[in-house]
Length: 486
Ligand code: MTE
Ligand code: MO
Image 1: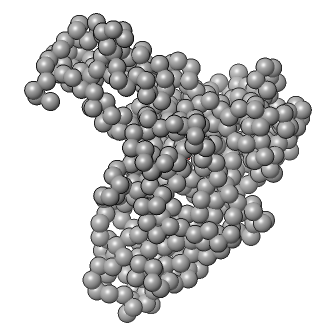
Image 2: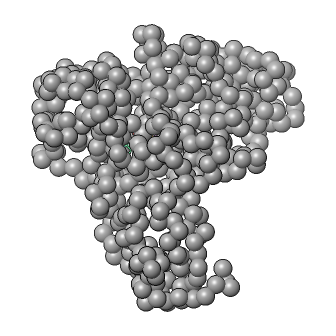
Image 3: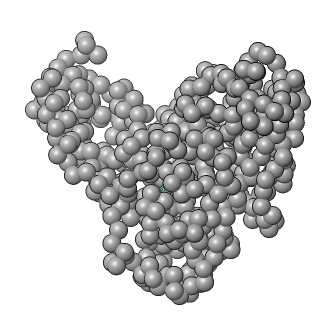
């Protein structure tokens, strides 16, 4: 780094063409991104940053406020910026309009969450909070925002529903008044939940927000059936996919979007929701309207939805076409993946995690957790272990088991679950078990859990067989290491 030449912003500004190369500056570095331009998932958008400091391009760069992007950038470093110019760039960043000005105040956020990023806001629920109630309280429910929370004027808000050529519109009140309401209790889980545990020495690090076990929650969602709305406009079965577009767009009008197959949209429980746990949706969770696709990864449950398009094509958003895909293990640079050959993730897989005992420290960092049995555990000379499980795709959880010997023998956990119709088991299952202290070693020991769904799908013992560079769909056995402090 120190052996690299110094270039001023004036020099950087000269490199905005194919012939001269595409350069940009960020913090103290100068980068030649020419070789990267072809591979950029967002296509030619990246050229808008050429010749400039990224700080000043921050508005069009919001989806990239993630560490790994800067790691990627580091590979293209060709020089350093003189100190004075770094300060000027930092100042330029402050002057850019704050796209995040409509993000809400988040009460007790550090108490309930491990915050993974502030802008955009990404926060996962702490494990002990997850297992404190069957329905996750709104202010404790994980938040996964790819961009800013958009501004909404409810009096002007319109939901457009169409086939891509013409569209019908519904106001917020129309939607609530004209259609029958429907409530579904469903877990919502990010495809990247448990991503951090996919990092391993043999295969390397994965790229993306390093979630521990808390990018999941369980809530009662109320709204109208997507099917009813499509039917009322004669759009049922008029295409193979139903696309959703959110109000959160960058300045190039690239908005968050996703789609689901029409077959899923026809099912009873896909909602255009306006309430969560019987309260009006909060802005972090999609006010005024969001889609809820039970059994499917969170990415398809588009928040702040204002357009629904029935089409023969999938959504062409970045998050449908070039993200939320399980890339082959051989791919080490997501930019080089042939995304068209990999389907978009839809249904979740069977998942479970241990949430108690747990530290209040970031679970990714806790190596050995020291536990002192208290309350009932102290009285009964037991250790209580608790967690959650979900089947995914509406498959009920059949059992959850715990092993203290890496899978040789298993203890059956007690399940707290709703009676749910066959293949519509959208809610999560909480589970617990009590192990006599006399059965536990005095040395540190591992506890693993794994669930099985009603189709007898179970979780793989390690991430090795399912590793992928974006670290999605990690449902390997969850392991914690405990030391009893009796
Ligand atoms: N919808 C919009 N418009 N913008 C987003 O960034 N994030 C998606 C999905 N819907 C997102 C979105 C992802 S990846 C997940 S996991 C869920 O919303 C998270 O929902 P929550 O924040 O209500 O927990
Ligand atoms: Mo997600």
